[in-house]
Length: 234
Image 1: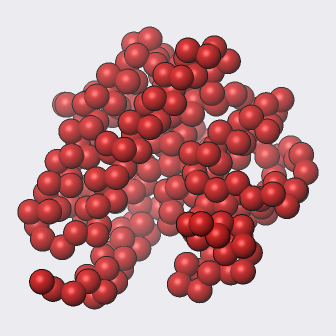
Image 2 (image 1 turned 90 degrees about the vertical axis):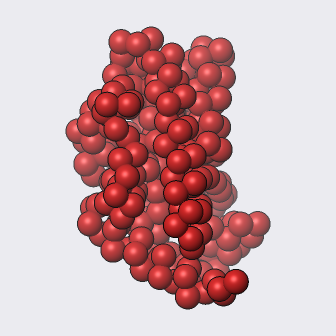
């Protein structure tokens, strides 16, 4: 892998947001030092690098920290523009469209999906899942728009910004399907996204970075148990 200055990534193996950063680094062919964080006992490096949210991922490039997964992916693409494939389009309008769908993904799918793990009642879980799945209908249209209805990825012929953001979630999508019994990316309802997920998983970068689904299921069950224990009953 190529290098351009010192790169460190502070992360947690199970985090889909850290996976996004790993995917971008892998696709760019960049070498970096990975530092696994214990979020129950956060390191001084993490606390000083991300004092606002105290969360991972944090990319440290030549001593300067970059936080938040979507920002980290954009930074990697821009800071290493001459290395590997571009993730964001060169055309300003196409770049704006990619950022629009990235924001939609975060707001309409990722937010309710994350809520599914923190709420306690079956009614709340069902509503969170309904919202996350409903968002995929529009995202199916976004894939068709970004790819021109013919290309395999949001980025067209090659993986782009939205592909990396959604791709980082794949192991968790599969794990959530096993935990909930609900089909999130359903080929009968969102055939383009279902085919996209199969293609993405076959990428060398995805094979190198995506978490084992069984391990994620185990982690998620432990996470739910901790949340349940820490949340008082009404």
